[in-house]
Image 1: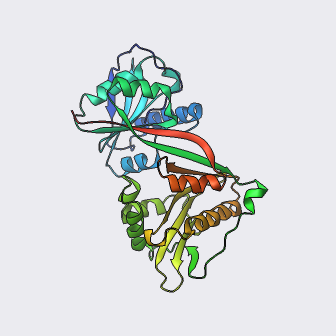
Image 2: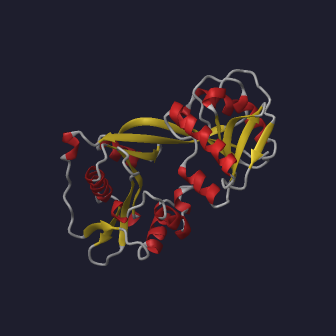
Image 3: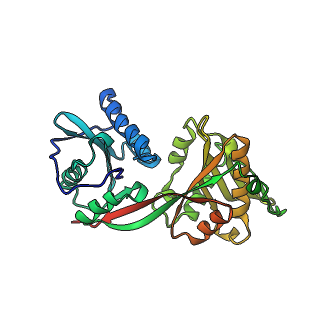
Length: 308
């Protein structure tokens, strides 16, 4: 993922070393990797590596890298699985390190390659054009103020044939994975989650079963939808982590019900705002979220370069 806060200049300082590690178990390597990521997050306002990229590193599916120039770490990245995430240390930007690192990393990558531009920054567009990448996805991050009293009063009628309760670890895993795969069959990341991926997320410090809302058919108990919330300890902003409705239950207002139940839960847990991510071309979902008061916060663009 590109994360740049300054305008890219048409000059390149050589990158003398791209150092990789099979994981982040090396303390010195990990310290530099996290230092660059933290500095970028502070300056840019968003993290350069998303949760899935870090899970992929932990699972050994992708490789973390450090970008060095003159014995100094100037950037970091994650490579593998046809994806490259790349960030330059804010203190070393506007010196051409991003372009030099991208050129070096691409030299060994002949297949199709995808990268995210967080914040849709103009510098990323310049690099994308220079290296032959085309935009293929746009992801919106939306935010809602949970302290707005007018929004807190929104309610919908609860049909008798649906009940909303919470996820039961160890009992609901397989059914949820199957439902999630069905709902997100066309989604390249979310729809591919496995029971192992679910277990990894359940082991995270933020996970609470009470924040994982499940909609079930009141008669059969069959799972027909869910709204999974992610609430970090003491964080003022909670996230609608993933929400989905079975295709057979679509058009009945269940998505709105699950959203409102999730927002109520976030308020109960002390959150003052709610975030979510949605594909820009998911018009029905975007319309729902905007009707609830969500507003644009950031825009991320995924770029793709075809195989060479």
